[in-house]
Amino acid sequence: MRAMLLASAALATALAFPAAPALPAFPAAPALPVSPAAPGPPTRTASAPGPPAWPASGPVPAPAAAFRACSGVPSDFDGDGRADLAVAAPYTEVGGHARAGSVTVLYGMRTERRLTQDDPGVPGEAETGDAFGSALATGDFDGDRCADLAVGVSEEDRPGPGSDGRGVVQLFRGSPGGLRPGAVLDAGDLGRGRGPDRFGAALAAGDLDGDGDDELVIGIPGLGGGGVGVHGTRGRRPYVVTQRTRWVGQRERKTDQFGSVLATGDFDGDGRAEIAVGAPADSLRKSGEGSVTVLDVRRREALRLTQDSPGVAGAAEPWDAFGAALATGDFDADGRADLAVGVPGEGLTANQRAMDYGDGTVVTVRGSARGLRTATSEAFSQRGLDGVPRYFDRFGAALAAGDLNGDGDDELAIGAPGENAVQVLAGTRSGGLTKRNDLLVTGRGGDFGAALAIVPGRGLVVAAPASGRLVLLRGGAREGAHPGVRPATARTLATGAGSDLFGYALRGSGSR
Image (cartoon, rainbow, N blue to C red; front, side, top):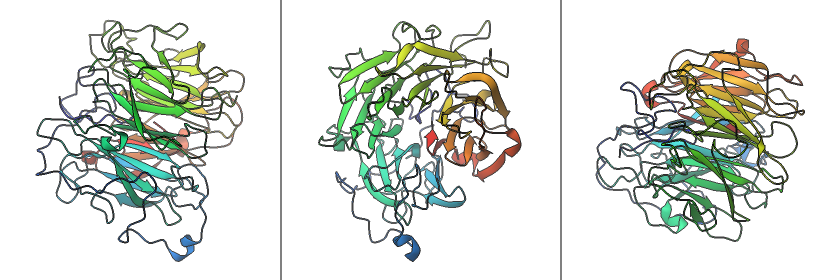
């Protein structure tokens, strides 16, 4: 199987959605061609269970920053009270190594700093085909109120040409002086043997144990039918959950891609987050219909959702890829997280051929005191929204949730990269997401809408990775059923090389 990048909202496999002959489609066909293996694996510094000491060769805080406390603002890496943004470019050439990968951090959404595996203090080194930046997650992993960054390097240490990577996750710790290199995690840190499992192909962060800091959730989609690693839980060593875990109790198939998409949210309002795990290539009754499994790791309970689940809008069909993108937000301001599920392979246009790219839909399931309630699920597509559904739109291939209009409930941004568009739905206290005043924003080519992030206080960031461009749509205060952004505010936030896939993954506060 070819090495593939599946960021947390990417579609399942090249079997479900074959790659186009030109640049890969995002995120519907994210397969990365394999480059020749670099000679010999690098020597790694052993990972420590707690925050490591900062290496002497790392960046030193400026004098003013050294005395500044961290702010607690989500995705604020340097403690200045302003949200920052991480932007992945996993095809970047580094030190002469093709597709080694980089991550650009926009401090305050202005000052750019690029991170690579060749930076001082970062364990290991950049190698050909590593794909540093194949996934991103932000969270406060050490409880110091500074946001930390986890970077997936899913193709690290490929055992040979044509094989998938073993994968690692590189941690960067936030501080008043900005991000600093931390530990490297691999399957061995979770008690597993290292193999071509693409460890770190998806990442998420959330407070799973209610202790006030975040745990890191790691997707391992190549581990049999896939798996999910949990790192940082209070009083427990890191561990892995698979479909075969006793309290999950699902049949496993090697093509499921369980763990290729991740999100976290407190769906029952008990102060502890649950994990939503996408398996967009899961074939329960139909080939590639897809599924989402919600894991409550504290209670050891699992709930699997498909389009055939009672109350879930729609019906499972071949190659729907239910769960190819996930986002959590409080769309009705009731204090409990709701779940949005992308189904970009959903076919609405008549006479579609098997395995064609889909028109796409998004299914939402609302939280309650008993967790997610499928009886309140809804489906949104461009049949009922502004726009026209087409079989190549891939509506729902990327999702992001956050409060764009400042009224206390979250909005949902939906990427349709085949249309070069993003659609925004407003949240309401009376019933969650609404079609009223839905906003369709189109952009220039390059899969505009393939990755999304909502940055607190700034607005919606839309990526077009094939052209290497980020666009910012500013948010604004307006109470009620309004999307909170206006097309007239659109401006280019940052640019990079399309050949680097600049913008392949984004991580602010509300990101896919």
